[in-house]
Picture (cartoon, rainbow, N blue to C red):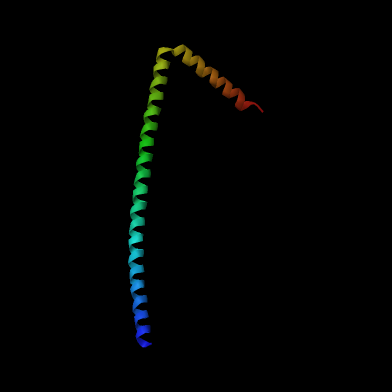
Amino acid sequence: MADKIHNTDRDISQELRELKEDLATLREDLGRTANTAFAQGRDAANQLAAKTSAEWQHGVDATRQTVQTYPLAATAAAVGVGAILGILLTRR
C-alpha cells in the first residue's frame, strides 16, 4: 500500500513537471505568435500609410495642375464654394 502511494506521488510530481514544461512552451509559442501578428499589423499599417500619402500627393499635384491650367475657373469655383459655405454657416 505504501509503495502504491509513493508511486502515485511520483506520478503526480512527474505530471506536474510536464505540465509546467508544457505551459512554458505554450507561453513561448503565444509570445512568438503575438509578435508575428503585431509585426504583420505594423507592416500593413505602414503600407497603407505610404499608399495614402502617395494618393494624397497625387491629388495635390492634380489640383495644382488644374489651378495653374484654369486659374479663372479655379478662382470662380473657390469664390462660389466660399459664398455657399458662408450662407450655410450664417443661416439660422
